[in-house]
Length: 85
Image 1 (spheres, one colour):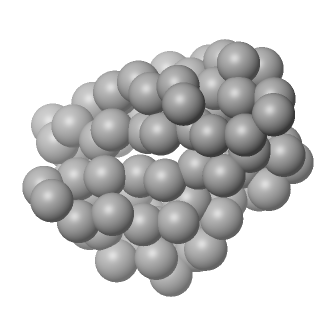
Image 2 (cartoon, one colour; image 1 turned 180 degrees about the vertical axis):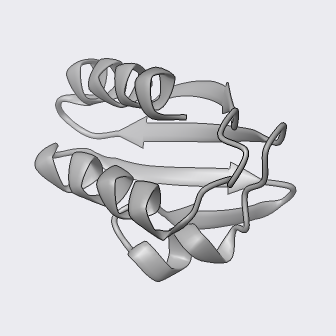
């Protein structure tokens, strides 16, 4: 399992548009991805689960990637988060 953390920099937080883009990015890979914030976890392939985390600017999210291609999928997700959040 690969994990990394990112801090939400977008002043609007993890709103619908970027949450949808995140779900698309996760769905393009083969690994199971989980987001965790403040003790709550969400399956990153489910839009409403991701939005239910209510991630706001300045909050830290832990991303866990598990699967046969976790190295590659983790790198892709980390780059996506750095560019979009």
